[in-house]
Image (cartoon, rainbow, N blue to C red; front, side, top):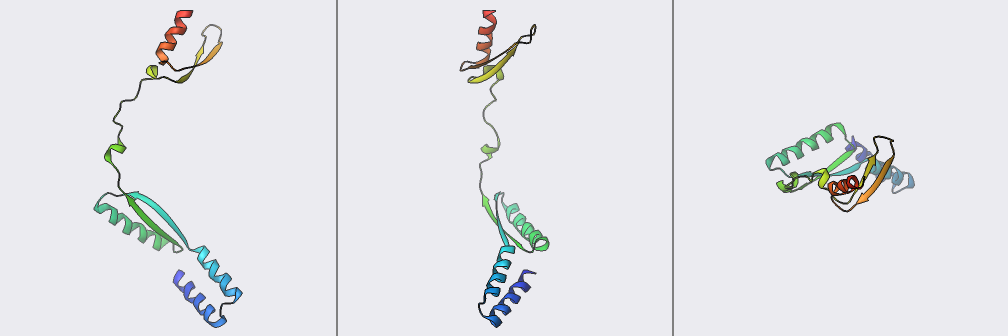
Length: 126
């Protein structure tokens, strides 16, 4: 589809010169044709096969779209966390909320201490 439009435009440009209508039509064709860029992880031989299949799909179903693929390497470590998560009661610099079971009064506080330490401080005051 795109090639036939390009040849048609070339014929219009040749017969009419660079008239205003031909330039406008050429700009319309260029606007209809879009290029999209994608970044995918590089995974060996599977990468090239994926690239071929994606381009084939786009050419078949989306004739006015061109795709450009960039492949990047990544470290396996980035997929996994090497640290254990911090338990909730050992987190610091948190905002917390206490609600009284008897009267439903609530208290919102902020602490730079471990949350468990601050909870013990609240309980020892009562």
